[in-house]
Image (cartoon, rainbow, N blue to C red; front, side, top):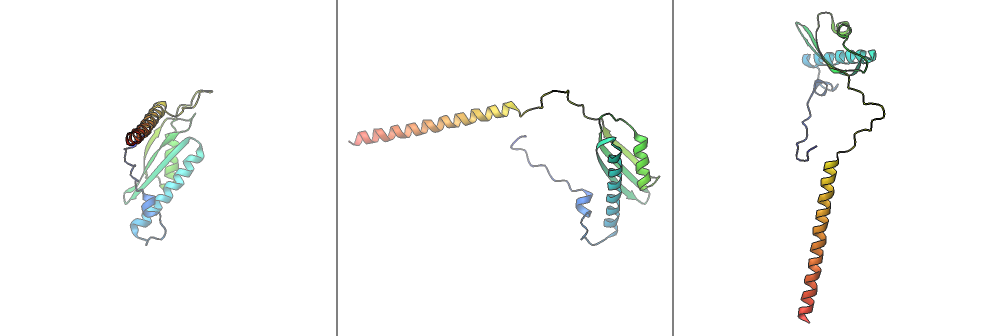
Length: 157
């Protein structure tokens, strides 16, 4: 990471905005809570199948019906089973729900015995060089001050 890079902005999601039970109930808040509950049920059902390694579900309800976005990563050894995912969504939010999938393939497994990636060497090397250079400057300044002190003492005597 770059030291001068700004901190990533925290993105407010539906759960952060409407998840607080102490909020005064409104139509929009109650609809958002129902959407969050449906998204949670779909997430738990999809993870229970073991076909997905990670999943994020967003449910948006309107008068026309519901739209469901499912994003995530397939588990190793599993691939497209879109019909099963759509069936889970329809079981939770209704058969008229529009489903959009954004699923990526499983991450390639590292070969057996492969060494895990270590820390980057170049930044550590540059840091060590900088520390050495600053240490050298410090020692040089100390030596100069001592020499100045000796010449002043010997000049006065």
